[in-house]
Structures are given as structure tokens and as C-alpha cells.
Image (cartoon, rainbow, N blue to C red):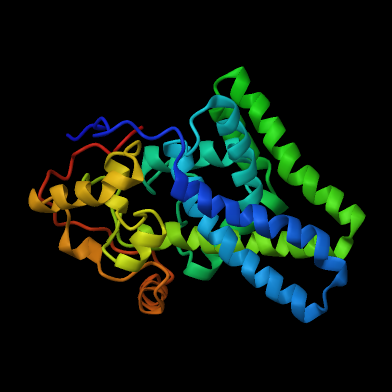
Length: 302
């Protein structure tokens, strides 16, 4: 069994590349708030399109920040957590708990985000996107129970107030702009849930060498902080993103990266999207059965 390894080097107090990407949102967001009324509808759509790209890129930063903070001074970490959540439309502590549930169960039974039997791609993505907004009671109950400390529960309340409170306030101030922001968040979150689906295409939570897809795409890993090395990330969730490429190479040298679960395509590559959409039919995908380990090996846990 493989445990979580210690990082080869202590993470820096400030992850400058990640903070630079987050700074793009700090440029886009005030522009969205202050120029909306002056723009034509064409200009507004262009601004929202840019906002989607900024949101999607910031999700890679949010994901890494949950595992290894990109700003380590406590006050700055707290601020960045809130602003990253606002950038992606996720109450930070709620999404943090949801994400670490995913790491505990690896898209298998017990994972709140697992695809349901008989559920195709579109239905899964729409349900995952809308559930926290349209019928959030189950999601809220799950994250509330998972918040084991008083501090985390206070953060849950704060983070829902930041995201939902800001959205409600914007609705009252400028209804069309509020709807636009909600639509942007939904579109971005739809894309984010796609990444989860593609990263666990035909994987098996029961197999330690089949927890996730490994993408070796240079473009994806360079711009999205080694997000393609998802198998290594699931084995060592607290490993800094800079070390994931070397970790994947080590796994491959030891025969612990299955060829069937490795691709040179990025999850956002249209060829990969087409393959996943066509393969996920009405019935669940066949799980990986061949293994270099034992079929009874327990799942990863964080």
C-alpha cells in the first residue's frame, strides 16, 4: 500500500504563478462590476466569455490551494480562500469538504459526486451543476456533517454568505448583471464537473493503480499546474503541484501507471471530450479490471 509521501521541498510561502493567475480574476471582476452598465450586449457577452476563461483557470488554482495553500501566512490564506471561492462561485469551505470527500472515496461508493447508474454525461453535468443551487439541502447536510470543528462550521456560514450574499445583493442592484454572474458561475461549474468526469473515465476506486486518468499533455500540465498527473495526485493528495510530474515518472518506472489510463490528450481536447461522451452511455462505464496490484487493495484515503 502506498502512503502519502512528504514533499521533497517545503512549499514557498507564496506560490507566485498561482497568485498571478488569481490576479487575473482581480482584474476581471472589478471590470465586470463597474463597466456592465456602459457596455453593449455584444461587449457584455465578450466580457462574460473572458470571465469564463478566467474562472476556469482560477479553478486550477483553487484546487491546488485546497491541498497546499498558495499563500501560507494565515491571514492571507484566509482571504485568498474566500476570493478563490468567489471567483469560481463555490463557498470555499463547503467545496473543500466536498472535494476531500471525493479524495476519500475516489469517485466510488460514498463519493457525493459519483455518477449515478444510468446517467449519461449531459445529465450528470447538469445535475452536478444545479444541485447545490436549486435543491441544496442534501449537499448542505453532507458538508455540515463533514465540518467536524466549530471553526469549519463558522467558515461554512461565512463562505455561503460571501458567495450567495454577494449574488443576492447584485440581483437587487442590477438584476440582469446578477443573472449574468449566475449564468457565468453555472457555465464554469459545468466545465469544472466535466474535468472530474474526464479525469475518472473508466477508473476504479477499488484499485490503487486505477484511481484516475493521467494526461501527459504538455499544454494542459504547463498551464494548469500539472493537473493532468491525476493518478499521482490521488495517491499523494498533499504533494505540491511542482512535484507531480516527477511522481508520475516514478510511478510509470515502477509499472504503477496503467497504459489504459494514460493519454497524451488534455481533458479539454475535443478528441478526448468526444471519446468520453461517446463511451459514457446509459449504463455505467466498465471499470478497469487488469491490475499490477491486487483487486482487494483498499481505496486511498486522506
